[in-house]
Image 1 (cartoon, one colour):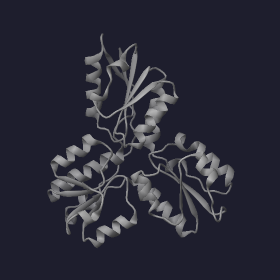
Image 2 (image 1 turned 180 degrees about the vertical axis):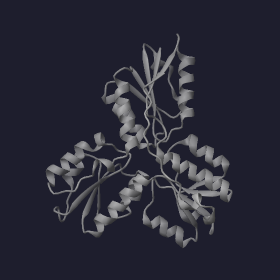
Image 3 (image 1 turned 90 degrees about the vertical axis):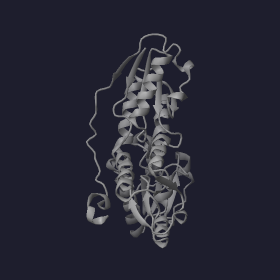
Image 4 (image 1 turned 45 degrees about the horizontal axis):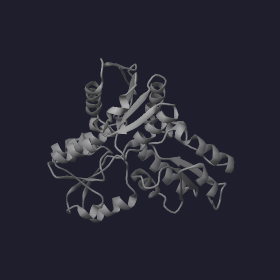
Length: 313
């Protein structure tokens, strides 16, 4: 059996930065450190940080006054920041800079008297945070059908933003429908789309050309991981989301010549390694592991000043 590993896969720069922020905060300030929502959508990562002294909460009211609260990579609404300030909490922002960029654009459009269509998934923590930056002017759409149901008071002043864990492919039909219905709409530039989401989806398309079966390592709550599963199926491969190696059903490997393996942007490489070992243990013959050519995404994000400069401690 052949196992083909996608490239790129796994952690993106925003996830790397968020995890590093929590680890550095624990080292510098000591436990406990509170984190609003799971820092990233991966149980392995969250449990590892919890073991070091991180406490994950949803409501800043649950954090003792004077404690340190870190905002997750998904970002938060201004109301969450206000609640933290009222509770006299110290805060560090681990929001992915690409999410922050969307928040800034939402606030700018609102100031300029635009209504905003947000393409995203209802209930996703990133979407909730983004909508909180212009709650009276934001309209969430999940599909082309949602676009047809929109009622915009001044369609000549309309802009569109997207959840960052979507991709150009994910949003194409929605954006096309918006342009057709609202010709004057301001649509997202390509560089507003998360590079990591697009790159991982491009890699899955390549995997699907050779793999009979594609395993995506990621959490059920991970938007980008679920999109990888859907894309693999759309490209004609059997595809499954696995949180860890134990989730692999031995029957999936029957009559399978090539297994493609990738990982969502919040899944650590150790889980990929364990998936490969599980495949080896289940395969009836030799397993040959190879990787697609390495891709350097060339993106890194700085730590916040509180953790870069000791004088801020």
